[in-house]
Image (cartoon, rainbow, N blue to C red):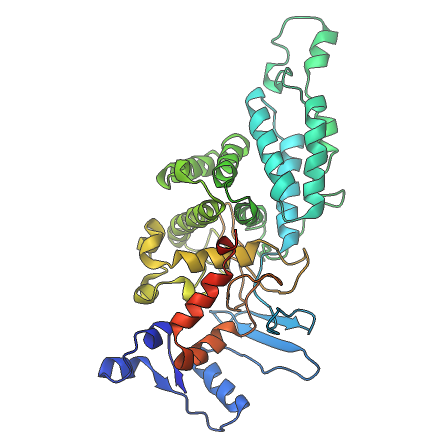
Length: 426
């Protein structure tokens, strides 16, 4: 058996000096499955474990910095049609719900509502009602859509205009926005916002949290919209940021980035998923520099900004000839240069379509970086495309892939993944 990166196998060059140098013969001390696994753990600086008895399988993967670990457990019930156990890192539903609740609570209790906010708000609520990953948030958004014409009719004046209009107190009262009714709607349930975070938590006060959760929300919406709703999705997000962001610097950066990434060219759901991903990486690129200059006074050292997904989470997302530069600034400004976009889209779909807590199998920590946020996390379970039976990567997928390609070749694996890609079934 040989061990190496997928590109070393797919090149077919195993006899030249360069080809031999790219591959390493697997030579465990004991020629057993445990021996092979221990050999691989040493080479990858990970801690993979073999399946336990009784159908359970546990995978523990240390973080890239060796500071954290995530343990994922599956049972026989979480299997696809080929009998393979489906486990993969996914976003956490709690943080997406929390960010949604925080956003609307802030809008209805802290912001002075202006007339220009009315239509962007309705558009964003409609997006949530149709495509939010949480059932209760979708239901709450639907209720809010029915309430909106009553509590905030189109004829209502904004709060900034009250006192300027002409007419009797009764006439002006009829035109006021009923913020009490809107705030009472509680879009994701009466228990939210709770003030707690899971994937987006930080040991440092006022770091990550909402901004991280909002990125998780944007990513999730971007992969869940209909095939031809990509343009509407990112436009609704842009308008939401434009009118409801209290941080003017953040808003200006986002709008400049939207223009830089040609938001007007987004058409499909795949376009929207990749657009949000590119936007997020550009934000992380800028914040990584700012936090370095601040000398640790900004950001969270345990969740450093970086290009995402990391090669640790998704080695197939980077093109074989660009593995070493996938985390570079050049990769963020021109993603097509260093990323395999088919694999990136499949990874994004698996990670955000059905967040952990919304049903299905899988567990794991999430996207690193934030600003308007990104989850942070340490888990690694590779992505292999979505099948009808459920989403998520296979347990130890990357490990299996490295060993399997020496017999089957990367081309077979790539064709299998592309056949299972969600865009191929639409």
